[in-house]
Image 1 (cartoon, rainbow over the protein chains, first blue to last red):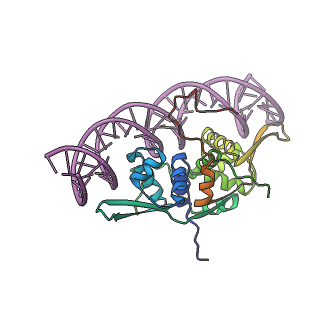
Image 2 (image 1 turned 90 degrees about the horizontal axis):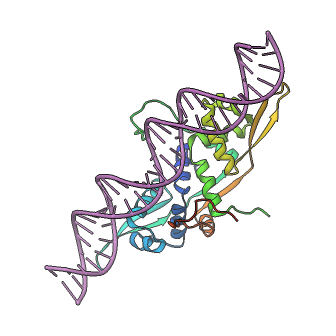
Image 3 (image 1 turned 60 degrees about the vertical axis):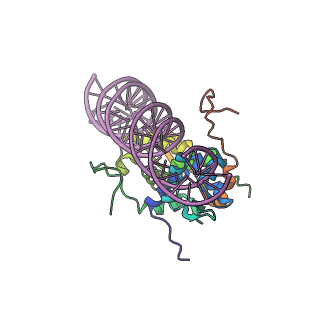
Length: 116
Length: 116
DNA sequence: TGGACCCGTAAAAAAGTTGTTACATGCGAA
DNA sequence: TTCGCATGTAACAACTTTTTTACGGGTCCA
C-alpha cells in the first residue's frame, strides 16, 4: 500500500477536528450519505453559521470534502461528503507520528499559524 | 473479542486528549518506557505544573496510568505509563460511536457532569 | 415585488484551554 | 537545619474555540 500516514501535525489537526461532539455527529451523519449545508443544519438542529464553521474545520483536516453544485432549479448547493480516512491509534503508532511533530516552540512568533 | 468500543463521549475525551502536540509527545515518550513526572518534565523540556496538567488530562481519558511509588531512598515518585489502547477511526466507526453521544443539550441542567 | 429557498461572512459574547509563576508539603543526606 | 529532589495545587494572563445574532449576496416562482 502506498498509504502514507499523516505527519504528526496533520494527525493533531485530524484528532482535534474529531474531538468535538458536534463535529463527530456531523461526520456520523455524512457517513450515511452526502448532504448540503442548509439541510444538514436542520437535520442535526444547529444554526447554519455554526455548522459552516465546523464544516470548514473538518474539511481543513481532510475528513470531509465539499463541492459546490447547481440544483436543477438553479440554486447553488454546497454538498459535503466524508472522505474515506482510516486512522489506527495505538501508543506505538503515536510514537511514530510524534517524530514528525513541529515542536511547540515558545518563540515569540507572529501567531499560531505558520506559512510555508 | 470482548473488546468494547468506548462510548461516544469517552471517544471524544480520548481524541481531545490526543489532539495536542505536547500530549502526543508525552504519550510517545511514555511509549518508550514508564517515567516519573519530574524526570519526564526535564526530558521533554516542560515545566512541571504544565506537565502535571497534561498528564491529568491523559489519565482521565484512560490513555495513561499513574502509580505512586516509593523509591529506595524514600522519595515519593509518581510513575506514568501508557495503557494499551487501540482505536480504529473510520467514518463508519465514528457513526457507530456517535449513537452513544450525549447531545449537546443547551438545557440549563444542574451541571456539565452527570452521574449514573 | 416580494417571498422562499440557497450560499457565505463579520462582530462580539461566552466558555474552555494552555502556560506561567509562586507557593506548600515530604523525605533523606550533608 | 538547610539543601536537593520529589510531590502537588492555586491564581492569573493569554489565547483559541464555540456559539449567537445580524448582515450581505444569489436564483427561482407566484
